[in-house]
Amino acid sequence: MSDPGTFRHRLAPDFFAILLVLIAFPALLEAIDMRAGRRITVPAGEVISTNLYVAASEVYVSGSVEGDLTAAGGEVSLDGTVANDVTVGGGQLRINGQIGGDLRVAGGQVLLTGRVNGDLVVAGGVVRVLSGAMVGGDVLLAGGDVLLEGTLVRSVRAVAGKVLLNGTITGPVSLRTNSLAIGEGANLENELVYFAPVEATVAENARIKGPITFHMISGMDQDWLRLLLQRAGSVFFLLRLTMTLGAGLIGFLLLRKPTQDLIQYALGNFGKEFLRGFVLFFVIPPAIFLIAITVVGVPVAFLGGLFHLSVGIVSVIYAGIALGALLLKWLRHRPAFEVTWQAVLLGISLAFLVRLVPYVGFLLNATFFLVIFGALYQRFWILLRGAAR
Image 1 (cartoon, helix red, strand yellow):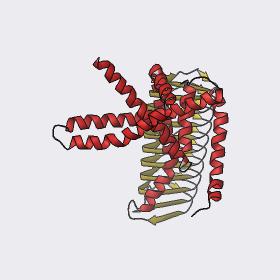
Image 2: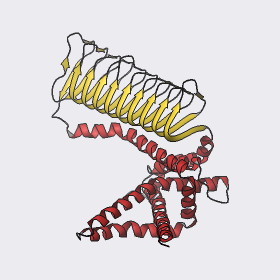
Image 3: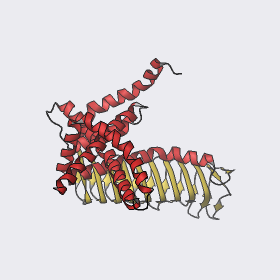
Image 4: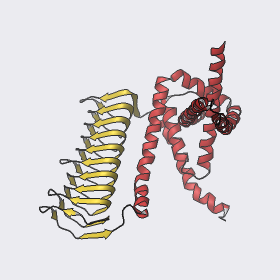
């Protein structure tokens, strides 16, 4: 068994990092531009001098961002210029502009034709780095169908189902794939190491200056899956954080008064709603099952289960908002709980950060989740009683 002093020593850096975030993050929130809605556009010619956070169904950025850009949406298109890092999550992602820092993306379809001065980290179903694109840093990919054209200045590491190399790669290349093809436009100036079930197909005019090392594997082995999860883990963590932030901001902007009332009530009745949430979270699922085993009760059980799941999803998002409102009240010495966009960003981000701390992170997130869970059911019950009168 681990010594308690050693355990506390290991957790000290995590708590120190969280303390720094608590102190610095509220001030940093004042220096960002946050936008949310159905369709967000930053037109050409507009200059944003701070960090930009966007959450919408459709996101189009053609202007200039002098800080970082974080965007989440069903369709995201970047045609402008970003001075620092870009983090994007969504369905269809098109990156046509210029990025001064790193680019981190996760989506169903990723298309890159622009310039990235820093590293490129991608997780996607279909990944296309087309002719004319340039990446100045290292490339790390996890995808299903990957095409690499353009110019990649440094190393490339990829885990994918299918890979086609058809551009200039200056640094070493390391791949794990089920199928590798090297096209006529390929210019590999360093070594190529790849793991695959069969040898790569190489076009006659392909230029390969470095040595080629082939390791035969039997399809998608356990090492392939482990490597994929390791490579994509950080990207999907950022994607989950971005999507949760987007949902929280949209909920706050579209439902400001209900959100304020819910958080005010939940934090004002913290203990009572925690107990209510704890009981309902564990009691309702067995009750739904008992209803479902009767033929007549199947539709009721289905609707009840769907509602229970919906309350849980909303509780995950609003638990972070409640945490942010509580912290801002304490940090700013306010007499009441206020739900602002700063509270949304602070609370949700901190809730994700605290999850990295064993036990403590789980307990903190579970506590606020159950408080909001109980408060949502209480508000719903009040609405039902009001409608019945």
